[in-house]
Image (cartoon, rainbow, N blue to C red):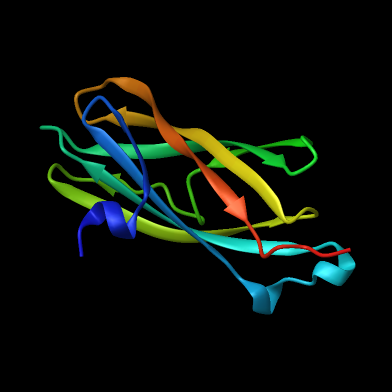
Amino acid sequence: MPLDALFPYSAATRDVVVRVSVSFLPEQSEPAKGRWFWTYHIRIENHGPFAVQLLHRHWNIVDGRGGKHEVQGEGVIGEQPVIEPDSSYDYVSGCPLNTPTGAMEGSYHMVGEDGSSFDVRIPRFQLIGPAVTR
């Protein structure tokens, strides 16, 4: 299966490509209580000549009512991975919302083996739950 089919959202910054797939989790959602939950799978690919290390993450999350939430922190899932040239790093995380729709986007702050420091864009992706009836 092509990568675009597995990861429908992608963005490239310098020699780093961030790919995202997202899944709604009905078993962890409770629409009657105003809770919807998604998981997202991120693949970070290093196509450059130097290793890069992910130091910080910055997320902008918007719910279906336009409410904005910002999340910042060190690394991802407790790690600050080093990604060697021509390799990738994958992780899965989750996002709860109090609306059945929303979106996420953000950036990773990286440092290169060559001493460079730069931000890598995380593409905007949609969080879409099942249709809600009232």
